[in-house]
Length: 352
Figure (cartoon, rainbow, N blue to C red):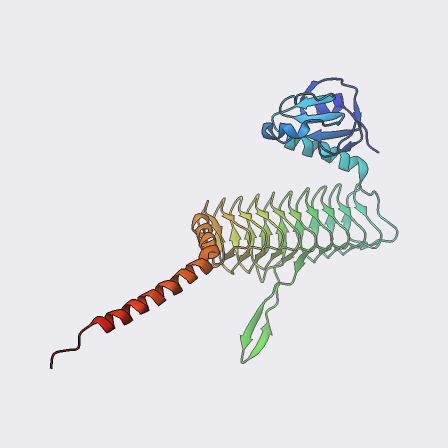
């Protein structure tokens, strides 16, 4: 079990230490659950009251909470500092495997750097190149002529198809698929005619692909995901898409063929984007949004079909009032009908 002192953690995250430097912690917990051997953190000054009565040995916080008895690591961004601490805990708790398992199937002409690890039951195809620090977990498949950059991790049962290129420091999570055949068909004379997909997939550096997510290879050109983009579980990127750098795709979101996302686009949970749509830099697509036409840079959209978020929120609010509005409308219709009937009764007959 990993152990860290307050002094070590202060140096690690660049925090100012208040209190005893030799306090030792072995875990990270929420303030209300933390004990003397735990580190806890408070995200910002507004949440300092959550540390009231906290029993943690070490607290990461933007200011000293009143009455806290342990060591305090003062920093401007406790959440980022906590993420750095969690990296150290993860590395200590779950050290990466080393070496090539004798139960792995590695092609004789694959090129593996000396620090590559390949787990039992994994496959590495002919002509594949795995650079320094690559980890291929048990049951994963790396196809022919793939190239995987330094320190990239391919988790158990993930599949990297032939010819795929993956950059440095990427994570391909469990059962994800990179480079499967794109969904290409033509309808001719009432039949579906298959269009072979001969492109590939290129992932930049620092890309993360969630469990059970898929990225299809292109028809002719490559499907591309640029550096820094993070993709959640159960997402799908179809053939010929180009996803810009530092984008976010939350769980269940889907890009149809030839979609282009600019830099830093945020795609929330369960968003669907139609084929050949371009989404500009910094746009935000709210949960459940359906996008059928191009989106300007910086736009914030919501709903199906996608509308500016303010307009869509007003629609949602009005939707909740529809039953009452309908009842009022029916009453008004009946009142108008009665008035019309009364007017007809009061109208004298025409002169002979």
